[in-house]
Amino acid sequence: MRVEAVRRFSRFYTRRIGALRAGLLGSPHPLPEARLLYELGHRGQCTATDLGRELDLDLGYLSRLLQSLKRRGLVQARPSPDDARRSLLSLTVKGRKSFSSLDTRSREEVSSMLAKLPASEQARLAEAMTIVEKLLTDGAAPPPPSIDLRAHRPGDMGWVVQRHGALYAQEYGWDERFEGLVAGIVAKFAARFDAVRERCWIAEMDGEPVGSVFVVKHSKLTAKLRLLLIEPRARGRGLGKRLVRECIAFSRAQGYRKLVLWTQSNLAAARGIYSSCGFERKKTERHATFGVKLTGEYWELAL
Image (cartoon, rainbow, N blue to C red):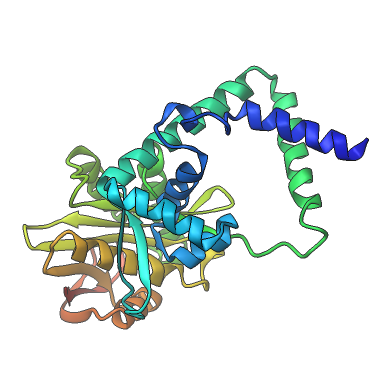
């Protein structure tokens, strides 16, 4: 009886989410391809081994899927900066567009499904799904929450401004002028966004944003790294360096010759990340722009 109940639920849910359709969510991608696009869209970049482990896919089958996506211009590979023998996979501009479409349709479909239920029933459903997930881990200790990277979407810019203003006021005593500066940067990014030569990464943990970083176009050959932020609960896990390396890889891939940034001398953790990633401090200036005495620093990385 219990076995049949599980099998019945599996068939029901498979039909409900459309997993057996030729194209998932009205896209040209069957479920396995859509899962690959989803993982790469959220991770930013990773190896085929990481993908196979995360999705529990045979590496031979995974290789065939990846080759198909590469031929269609959706996925690209480049040597890892840490080990040239390994390749890092990432989405192309075309691939990011496909991922964004899939992600939007998935959210819309789930929202539509939940909208048919009253709020109390939505909460029961979410709780039941959490119970299923926990029970099927065989009682093992839950792994630490993973941190995924994704492209920005509506609502993220407001979060970036609010969290920069709140965190820097709390941790360093900076006043609202810093929040105003951040608001100006994200407003310009949103209004003039160049999807080919600019990028924003949002880091998520348990479905909640915990970090951000931007690459913006400064000139034809120079890009700027801006607004690196890590929430306190996500610190100590290498996320800052991961985000900065994403910026470096993206800037190189887009043909920039130099990546520059502006930081402050008292931001020790950020300065440590920049130094370890190869940036060099070029000049400093004293200022009190944010209500406290600071020393601004200009850093550069030749690409």
